[in-house]
Amino acid sequence: MSSESTDKGVIAVMMKRFEERRLPRALDISKRVENGERLSETDLAFLRRVLEDSHEVTRLAEKYPDYQKLYAQRAALFAEIMQKALENEQKGARQTME
Image (cartoon, rainbow, N blue to C red; front, top):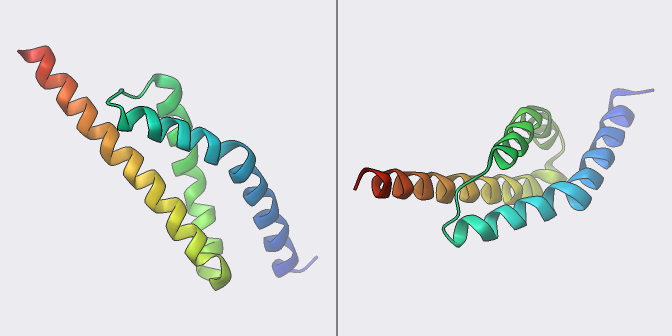
């Protein structure tokens, strides 16, 4: 099997996992952090797994330009979640100190 065939198979699996599991979960987390909630340990574990997988996703996006726009949108979504979650944590820490 060629490297390109292997990559295409990996991309197909990653796309399916993203559409069926990761995107719905990310959107749920995004909605909750937008409402001021803090991340749970389960949320943090999920985001760690996504970060760990991002190295492979990045490699494939760099190799196959057709996927770069989708990769950029995915990265932006997770960056927004992390930024808002950090703001919520800082806000919660300030409230605890008061």
